[in-house]
Every structure is written in structure tokens, then in C-alpha cells.
Image (cartoon, rainbow, N blue to C red; front, side, top):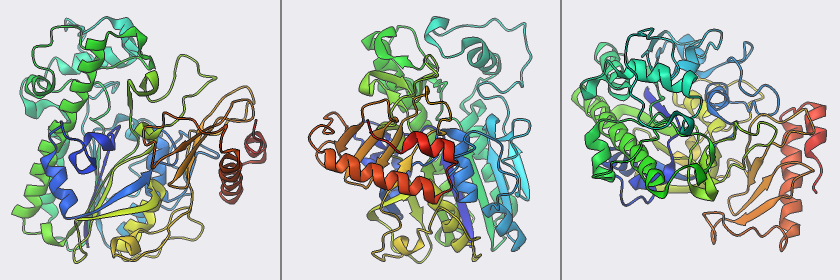
Length: 451
């Protein structure tokens, strides 16, 4: 089986036409949806970026113990399993954090290519470049650590092909041209560049906010929205939308290359994201707080509810699936596609029965969470959903929130006071899951009580 797996950092599902967006151009991903099973109930598990990738590769949650950490040395990864079966396996990414010293997320791939120079990657040491700040530095998140390295790299970009998305996709296209004759391959394409800074070529921005002349907050501070004007907030949505359309444009060329090579019809394609981002919803900008490290942010649907499309040769596409699924289910799915038996003890289950049209339940509960705290003073919110109800649980010292998703998908009406029975039921299921996945006793003890 030829497999192309694509994960995009910080891509919101509601910014894609296939998930109902009517103002952002994503024709190529919308066309992919027409040939795929589109999952409407897909959620993250371990949050944020690197924990999500550990789940995809190893099929086990990590929010209960290690959180953001190197790829666990003892974990069996899907890329290793497929490589050992004779697959050509490759990782192509512009994601600095995956290949930062000691992280080892390239482990198990036959080959890997790293597109350098995005965000905080210490790649450009050109100090003579005059930095042209697009906005006041105080509006940016970690301006010296994140924005300055980016602006140094950005000074060399002239043509669209110089941006990280085109460079990363072109590396994938080059790899396909060299390896398409393999009957069995896994191309793992990890595109970081939907993540901020949002700074696409001008024509993408002009499409969504023409004539804007104010400050461009390309890497906004994770905070409440009050530090930006309404025009600036509207413009960061346009910047984000521009990057999404740019991503769609270049993925379209990747899909076209698969067709040029004569292997589109026989290639499985999986497309997803690791989490979303608040662009003013719930009064927030960002995905977690860095200003109050002792108090996290709830993971509402804009962050926790993600896109997932699965195209498999010989299986009917153009279908929607409402089953509750998570990123942790992708490892056994990739293993089944590749004809290998996943190891025992995984937290995920293969989605292939659902892709094949069977009416099965993969899971009855999805939990999305940062690393659970050991310190009782720290507030860490877990999102717990059965697909109908969504519980936002921050621990014993924080009032829970409860939302009815079919009638309130934006999660604006807290029903925790009216439906205490649902709160208690979801919390009990949450605690059972934490026990089942081996949560250390100290962390478990901090999560097993309701206020």
C-alpha cells in the first residue's frame, strides 16, 4: 500500500470548506473530501504539538504522564513497524520542534528531510539584517525568542516558493518522484506552517482583508483579546485564512503529482491537524496561556475538535462519519493499512472498519488534555466528550462547564448547573479512562473529585 499521511500544525477544521466554511478558498482539500471518509467527530488527545505527534506515531496517550517530551524510547512506532516490513518510510517536515536536539521524532524513518528556518529554528545568524517589525513587539508572543529568528529568515524570501509551505511540499514531491515505483511506502508529511507566524505572500492576505493599513500581528501574544483593536483582530483572521489557502494551493500540487505519477487512485491519503487556535472566540487569542502558567485555558472546540479525512483505495469516498475518534487511533489505522499487527496495549483503535462503512463504535469517550498536574495549585483543563455532551473539567478547585454540542456547537451556554447528572456521569467515565491508561496515582488523585 502506498500511504501519504499529512498532519498540519494549528489548522482549524472550521476554516475548511469541507467543514462548512464559506469564505475561505480550500478547493483542493474540499476535492480530497469528496474522495474520502470525512470524520465529523475527530478530537485531539494529548495537547499540544509534540504530545499529539507521540500519539499519532505510537498509538498511546501521553497526557497522563510524560506530556511534552522526546519520543518515548521504549515506544513501538508505526514507522518502525512499516519499515521493518519492507516499506520505504520518509518524514518530511519544516517542524523545528520535531528534530530539535534530543526530541527524536525522526526515529524509525528510513529517511527524513528537515526544511530549516521556520519560527524559532536557530538557522539564520544574520545579524546585519535590519528587522522590520510588522507590529509593536509587545503584541507578539516571545518576540525575541520567536519573532526575531523568523524575521531574520524572512529577509531572504522573495518568491512564493521561498516560504516554508512550498519548500516542504516540494521536498515531498521530489521524494515521490524518486520513490513512486515502490509498491509500499509511507510518506509522513508534517507541515508546521499553519502555525503562527502568519505571514503569507501579500496576494493571499489581500484576498481576505483588502486595503488594510494597520499593524500586522503575525505572531500574537496568547492573551485575552483586549490588547488588539477589532481591525487588528479581523486582520489576524485574514492572515490565518491566507496561510490556509496557501496550504491548500500547494497540497493541490502534491495531489496532482500523485496523479501525474499514475498512483493517485492506489494511494491512501490521511489528512488531519494536531489542534486549533482561538482567534477571538471565548475572548481569547492563542491556544494556551503563557502569562498565567498556574492556570491553563479550557480546550473548547476551536482547539480540540479537528479535521480528519481518510481516502483509501477501493473504499467508497464522499461520506461523512459521525463516530467519535481521536488522533491516537491513527497509529493502528496506519498499521492496518500497511498490513502489520500493532502491539498490545495501545490506547487507540483502527478506523479501518469505519472507513469501510461498518457501523462500529471505536470509543464512547474522547479526552483532550495537556499534561495532568502533580501540583494541586496548577489548573489544567481536560475536555471530556461523548459526542453529545462536552465537559470542561479543571480539577477540584474549579467549577466545571458543560455544553450540549448539537444545540450549542460554539459552547456558549454552560449547562453544568442544570444537568449535574451529566457532569457526574462524564466525570466518572473520565476517571475510569485515566485509570485504564495508567495515570500515576498522584495525578489521578487530583482529578477524581468534582467541586
